[in-house]
Length: 86
Image (tube, rainbow, N blue to C red; front, side, top):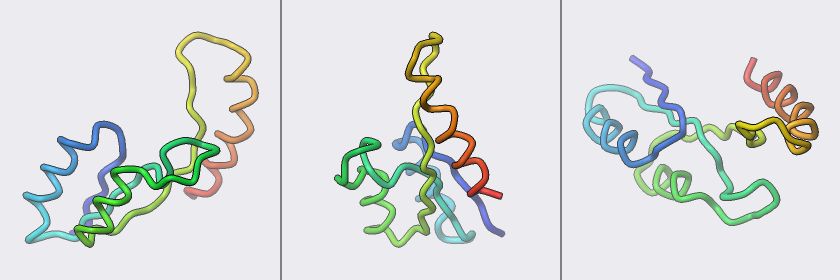
């Protein structure tokens, strides 16, 4: 069985992946880079590569809770990322 775990809080997700690793195929969906414009690999990406867990990058912008100008500019990036997942 394949199990997909989506990014967020990585510590509990990683603990779950360690438990399930023996019997199922685990894939993790998360951010490959720490920040949008930065090229430093994220902790979750490095850990998944080290543990030989399949990693799929989700390249979506951050959405702010309060409506502000950043959300307006993030909307096209969000729609583009949604199309990639189909």
